[in-house]
Length: 105
Image: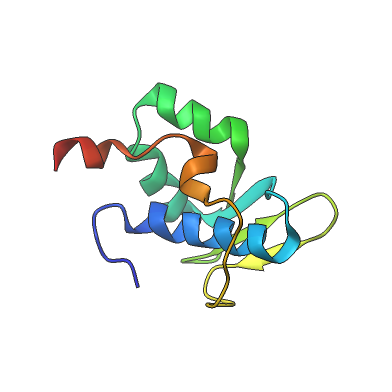
């Protein structure tokens, strides 16, 4: 389980990887608890966060700790739902940006 400063970003990327592996396409929307969404936004410089939003719409939900990826076709993948998957392309490459916390290590 990711526990570093960027743990919520890592969790989101793991869920995106799971969605990609399961459906062979990228998700369109991330349903995230408010705290997770705010934490992820704080990790990025404003322009980098805009890049994230060009790939994935982020919608805040009431459930604490919720990370779910969905698309308009009704496909869904929740973080922690499945552990053994291998996407053909990883989320970190797809997003094309990394959290600013990595620039301070």
